[in-house]
Length: 251
Ligand code: 8X3
Image (cartoon, rainbow, N blue to C red; front, side):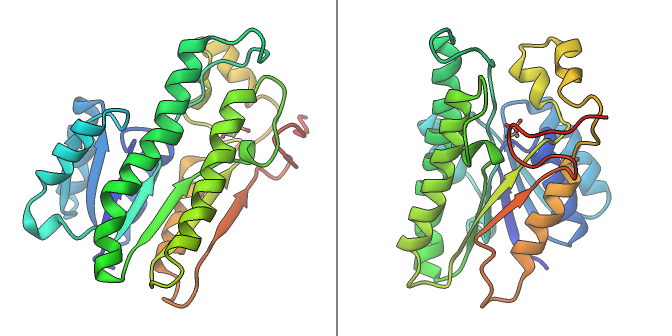
């Protein structure tokens, strides 16, 4: 209750669901993203329900923008209790020898370097206060590669390594680090992966009931509100008829 939660990529999908669930939990929100109109509409909606919200429009790939945005926070908002490193995306499902280099660069810059930038900017304050929680949105894709997943899977394996590394580095503090690893979640994820091919995106969720952003946000809120001595280090959340990144039973 009454924590300050910073969520990157809060304008859609799991990030937006986290915004609503943490708002329901009574927390204060710093919502970040690239889409100013979406940030404004989500913020207006949550403020109307009594949640305190600040929005910051920036791209996690832009270090200077990220730093300037965080520096612009009013004093009362500088103490971030929970950083939800959610901003991320998949682009393409081509074989590794045929993939698009620009797609690869976007995924690496967002999913790995953007997460690192936010961690580097926010965690020092947590260390100096000896308090805080970083929730990284990883993926089942980080556990093992699947066909065509190559670079995306590599970025999520990096999120796993960076979460584990950070957990080691802050082990002497009261800071907690959680790596959430969702499986099939129906959001705009596949639409973005297939560059707006909605028909192809729909096939990803055919014949199986996928997870929703809310299912993942529930776990994030649970982890953030677990007793102080409990560190939810890693959670793999799959659809019931999914057993791994590549084993999906469709009916
Ligand atoms: C999203 C899950 O299985 O589509 O990270 O890669 S999957």
